[in-house]
Length: 274
Image (cartoon, rainbow, N blue to C red; front, side, top):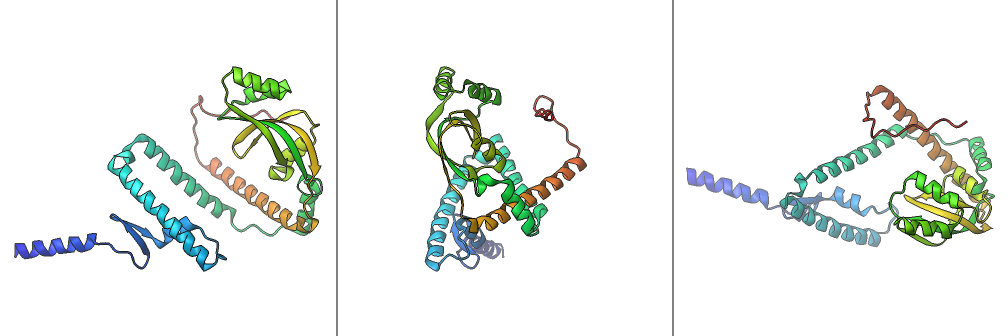
C-alpha cells in the first residue's frame, strides 16, 4: 500500500505544481500566477479605449509584470526581502496605499458646487481665468533638498548671477536655464503673488517637488476661453471641498488618537501671522 499511496501523493504534488494560464490567470511565471486583475491594474487603459489599444496595452503590461516577477524572485532568492531596507519600504508602500483608500472613503462624493460658488471662485482667482499669464523666467533649479534658511539667503541676493556663484562656491549642485511659467499651473494664491512681482525681482518657488530661484523676464496674456471657465472652476471648487472634508476628518482622527513625538524630530509649529 505504501508505494501506491506514495505514488498517488507524488502525482497530486505534480498536478499542484503544473499551473496553467486560464480563466482569471493570464500567465504563470515559475510558481507565481499573474491574474487578470493585476493585468488590468498594470495596463490602466481608459474605458473608452478601442480594442487594438487595449490589446497593445495588455501585452506591454504583461511583459512588465513578467519581468517584475522574475526580478522579485531573484531578490527573494538572494534574501533581499529580509533586509531592514525592504521591511521599511514595504511598510511605507502599504501605508501609502491604505492612506489613498482611506482618503477616497473619507472624501465620499462631493456635492456639485452651486453656480454662486463657481462664480465666486472665478472672481477670486483671476490668474486662472481672465488674468491668466505666461511668464518668461530665468531660473536656477536646486538639486536635492536645500534648507529654507539657505533658500531665503539666496533670494535676498536679488541677483541670479550672484546666486549661481554662491551655490558653486558652497558646492550645491544646480541647473540654470530659461523657462515658461503658466499662472494656472500652481495654487491661485501663489500665482497671484508671483504675477504681482515686477520683472527682475528674484523669488523662490517649489513646484512638482523641485525648488527654483527665479526672476520674471517677460510676460504675455494667456486667458483661457470663457466658455470653459465654469467647467474648470466647478472642478477646482469640488477638489477644494474634498480636500477640506478630508482635512476635517483627519483632524478628528488626530484628536482621537494618542500621538507622541521625539522632541528632536518634531517639526516646530509656525508662529501665527501678525
